[in-house]
View 1 (cartoon, rainbow, N blue to C red):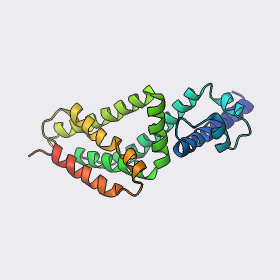
View 2: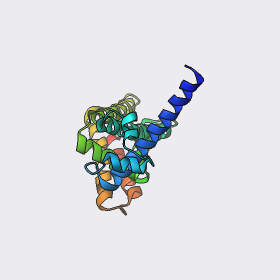
View 3: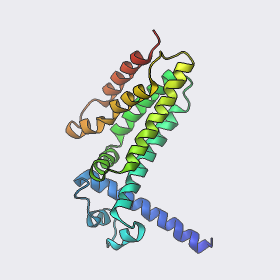
View 4: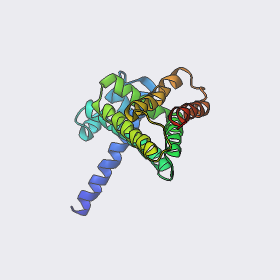
Length: 198
């Protein structure tokens, strides 16, 4: 690849990221249904919607990029905090605290993700959800293998854990002052009790 091609590719990647960020902000502000190309182009500081069409073949492709970006951000944020942990109990606690923390501090991203998944029904969101559940299952199975956790069905427990945080963005939309730190403490206590070996 020539220097000019590399520069163009880098510029294109920057512009795509700029458009995705603008789409997230617009969707968070006006909702998926009203997030038109015109609004997104204006949010990205672009003079015409044809710049969006140049980088994304369809609104569906752009929305897919929104979903992938937010899910990737969640994965990175949570993964960075879980990796240093050495016990399954600490991993599970950190998972819950980190997901709640991300939801609390990245509200526009979470509103956009929820709006797109509900409005467009992207299978990418289902895949991302399954990946999160798979990671949880791995933590739970590890805790059982080391004797930290009692016997239970890891798939069922992982699903319940995941659902305990999935609903938080909806709570925050109706109650922006909701105590997320308190919520994190309670769900950590609930699942410490639910998984502990008696």
